[in-house]
Image (cartoon, rainbow, N blue to C red; front, top):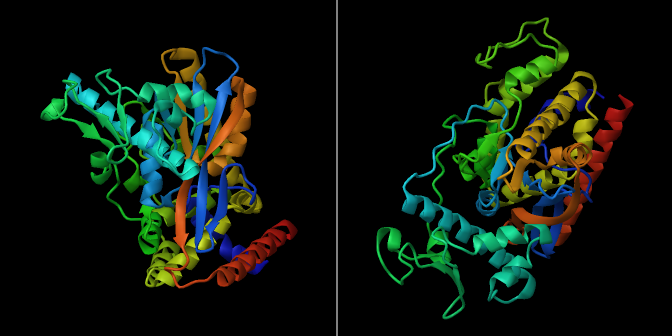
Length: 434
């Protein structure tokens, strides 16, 4: 029991690093698969929900994970960018959107780039499933749920209203001829293609400069931190979360005046235990604690070898598939904290989605970009309170682990994963008996 108590802080920190994602091994929101004998992969779900009311928008639950391969964030960005509105998690809020270009050609070029990126993701899905290049928009539409087909067909036009060209000679590409609709050209008349866009790194303008345990873990494992991989600077994107002050209030802390700074310093000794747990978690993730500094040192050690990085990724992936049970089993004050972190924040998302449904008839598609651990409760709320029903799932690869490159074989990995599962089971049993 004492061992479990000592590991609670580290467990909470590690699971929150990855977005409090996951549920059971057969979770509909996150999974670990053996891609082949040398490759293990963590996938995160995009869940499509359709409304009973034809006037309400399509909703996609797009799973977030706070550390992942850069390719995951590229794919997710492309999916998010085609939605009319994006509601995203971000405790603390306050991120200011950067206005879209107001000049017509610049706006059209940006829209064209986003649509080509999205279609390129679908083309890769089609190629993986069919072992051939797509030749039409209809081919690309087969890779998404039927409810999302209108989004695909809308993306088949560039920002100037001309059809995007899907080419296969001499190799596959998706091309816009620019503002003038003619080959070649300069500035707004220049052609845009998937090949060229793929070689140009996306510019992320909203990543925070401060270091924290999440970035430390990402750096150690050769992964990308979410704020460094996703561009949040779109006016259609909205922070749909609780502030730290609201979380403190929900946990029994003092009221925080509107507009006040959430960072009020260390808590008093007589603060509620659940509030102390929240404070410990936030300070660990920000790097402002002894636990964070010690963890950062250990992570540098882990990241010093390919084998250490691969083994840590495998352990992280397996923990994520059990995260919902691990978090739900936390005792006492930590259980209150987990309820707020998941359920109270989900209530805020549903409130914002309801406002979009009721007040913004022009919004025909909404993406909810949240840690997948929220989705079990959130999906039930959206179905029961707003009249939606689940239609289908698309899986996005989040972390791919090359076992051969790391010097591991399938038998070693199988044994290590079996040990991890036994450890998690023992920890869960200890928590339930506590």
